[in-house]
Length: 195
Image 1 (cartoon, rainbow, N blue to C red):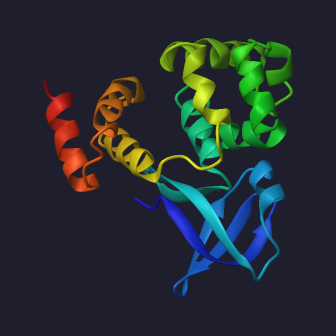
Image 2: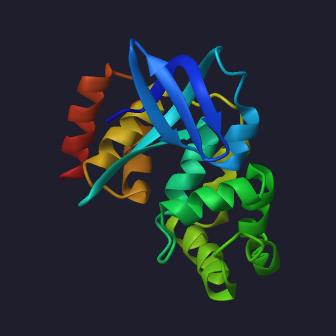
């Protein structure tokens, strides 16, 4: 999985960033929010990425900050919200406004997102608060801009193996105190998850 890109920004469009890393150009779909945070073309950029693999396409999505990627991951878990709608949501409202709207169950604010009707907005509020352990599950998104890379990598590896976020979270929390090397942490986490 490609989790992060660092390289020269070759091109930026409101929906796409082209980043050259070691002679290879990676085209990443982006939100308007990320577009607004990108530096000038020709300068170095870091994008936190999500690899989307489907039956007939492979796409790379880029996010300016890890919190935006985490919120994207939450949004696509909602029934009826696909990658395109999740990126539209991240571009239509700021990260803080989007989290506040979900927390406050502000359906009217969420329907301002292109393609989101009242039913989908209600689902977003209900399913995110349910799946993420209540509204407190959204608390970490608005914290410091840099999350713990070890924790993020471990969580990402386990969710990519098919484990649900709410099952993975307590296991990652248990390993946080000792913080073994990532390979060992994955091994220990898999043992704990199989109990």
